[in-house]
Image (cartoon, rainbow over all chains, first blue to last red; front, top):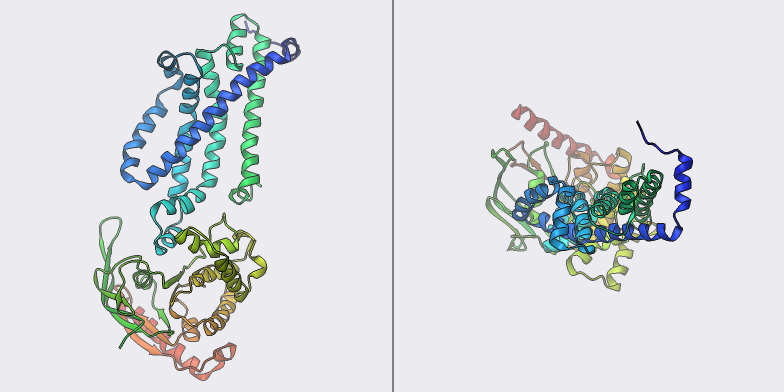
Length: 223
Length: 259
């Protein structure tokens, strides 16, 4: 037997929940997702810069990153809650863990893809290595970093929801779990559509930021 | 005598990725006087680019010394400007910021006088209207003009040009050649010009160095005694045909010997 609510049931469930309640859950999820995403950027870009600067760091950090990435975050989540408590901290860490890998990889790849002539230009000016990285490699990596950001922003919603599944009293992920356990399936579906819509909007937001602030980095097809 | 550039006993070998050692240059000796325009021609892979990198201080020779005004070159110098084969413009900066990039990269700060200087150079190279355009909005020839303008910004004594027009179509290439003649007359520099084109070398240079197949060594040093200022008419000069003929013979001869 299948239990699949009719679209009209889902719509009805959507309006049955007060908008204030939706807003509360929505905000809880989005704020964790965005904070985790920003934290992830703050960690991964400097990390990529360090790995580009030092081969030793690259060789020691990369295997570690791959190990972290290949450990299922869903499996670590309950442990993190035990370790860090039930506040916002574990939820941020979970979101961060799930988003930072594509960012590190895309930023590193972009910086290493800098044409050798540009590096020679920098060397011929006797510029210190940190200027080579800040003024040439990092800007060159912009289109790569934006690809990473687009992947990471959608992952940040997934991270926030995973964290809410484990421990939360608010948020769309929590709401889906809570509704399902009370067999309010249409309500759970309504929350699901919300999650998809939020993901889409955040993705578009990244695209918009790239278009407004970094138009040069868009390829002709992306325009 | 104090030469502007002096290569004495230069040999250079480098290691390929598979660890194999390649001798790129073998006992190269030559000098360049101040404000002399010297072109280097030779078959592909004869170490022309190695020559350039040695003079720019990007690499140091395995043997011998490179000197600029009697000073040994042991690293990049401020009085040497480089024009690369490709324009190597930074796509996130507009034209004038690309021209100013060496100043920003080296000193961290761009002064008003640098800005004025950059604008004056752009006017000279016919790019003033494009100062605020992005590089990808420019044609290949214009992009390379920006590359040349950038190399001139710090007003180097020595300008190294590595096949600067080789990526351009034939017509643009010719036009750029004539423009370079005018530019060099207005702003005399000591130039080391690497090229594949014999007629380009004869048109531009006071002297042409001919290199052999790898390991590259100098096989001749031909003074081009064509009157200056040179222009389109130079191409019709009887001596022009003579020089290109002589050079062509050299190139094909060295090719045959190698084969």
